[in-house]
Length: 483
Ligand code: SIN
Image (cartoon, rainbow, N blue to C red; front, side, top):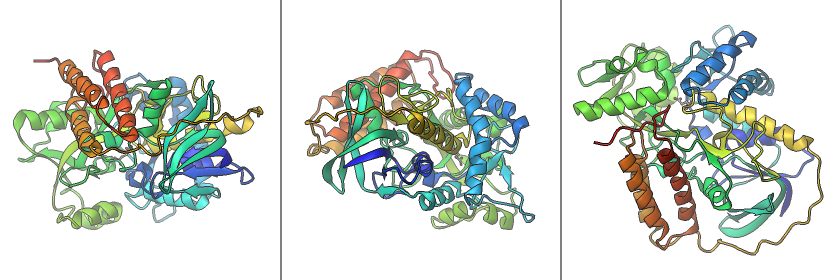
């Protein structure tokens, strides 16, 4: 199989990249499972857009403040400025964001935004609506059930991938490869991510010496319902707090003001740590309280949350929901420039959550992720289409891991890894816990394990090493002094 462009991942970044490549090009989009098993599908709150020229400096300021000024300012400026184009483009192509009775787009606010600048769809189903829209818009071939287990790289040039396609080991060649495979969610015991997001490609990059950056900055979402049997937990969108929901303890106390003057609307890292610390210190439960909302309005504004929680016995907005922080988003990732180019490897791009452009710094501002997906997909495609084509002879890649993807005890180790990541490399870290985690990960690497677990462990090692290297707390990386 030989393509002009191979896109790994069918979330918002992968699909918007495909939408921007002309029909005449031979493009293949691949996804590991069914296309809607991706983080985009589960995104609730919305997509940030700069409201106009005048809002750009403020959006940049909010993004940099949430990111603890660790952001790449150039990338943030690009994100904000380009949003004017990409949002208009998506709307012009037919995407329907929620509107008021007069047909004006409704904007909402989430934590750490100075103004209401987040567009949403289906009330609280923005990701699902955008994903469906882009699936329909994409005119290129999409192959589901395709699990990439190797990148074909030789002498600084990427020639394609090895993958199982419907469980058959297959080599897919391409002139250009775009990684849009998402973050690392499945490494954590509690996470809000799709089960397909398991850091395989990050792990391949570690193996090939491709740099990952900012991996210590793992983001935890503060308001997640974790009392479910699956690793993916139920998100309660930040837009709920943006609209006025409160975080309270058993007695109804809004305890977050003990941690930050902005209370529930402080940035995500501060709210997550506040909840975690308060629960640990007091032994009390934390809840998201919606009792201030009028029922009709709530059900229309948050229809999916209302329905999902009704199915497990909650009557919103009357009932409050017990909450915990859970892993949500990787601020770091595969290091690239602002066109998605990976230093030292020709013909290989990375976009979306998998990428580390530096746009999020040490902590992502709420709802900047769907925007990141579209903005940097557009830029990577522009770069790819504009560059001069060089004729290259494709080497043969003999080595194949297709028949050793899994080994007998992988499931046990995978669960153990999830627990280590959650307990030792989670919201609050200590140097001691990080060293322990590093040793346990190293031990697992030396067991009889399959290729896919090995890749997860490579990524886990990169996270723990980055966390150990940063000895002072910053943004979502919080180191507590050891007792
Ligand atoms: C949410 O709806 O709270 C998630 C939005 C995001 O991760 O930016």
